[in-house]
Image (cartoon, rainbow, N blue to C red; front, side, top):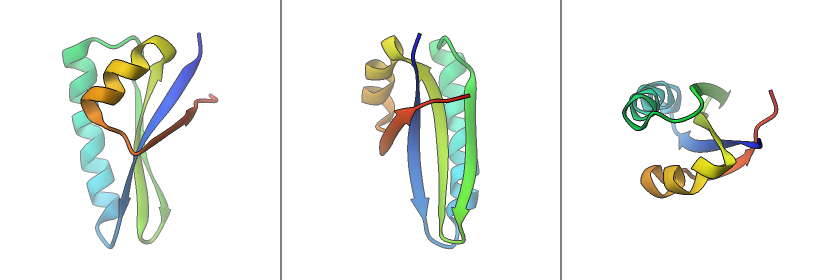
Length: 78
């Protein structure tokens, strides 16, 4: 089954802190919704740009996307 990485972008001097905090909410969502996968994370791309992400299966993508409104997505390669 195809896996998709849903991504939230955060910019500015506090981007990394915000992305790290956002990941906590993604983990809470996974527990509440009992999603198939439990893959989340955050990453600093530059001093002023960080991301938080959540990996979902193809069939879960639309409901999760509609509930959480990610900024973008891409195929997930382990």
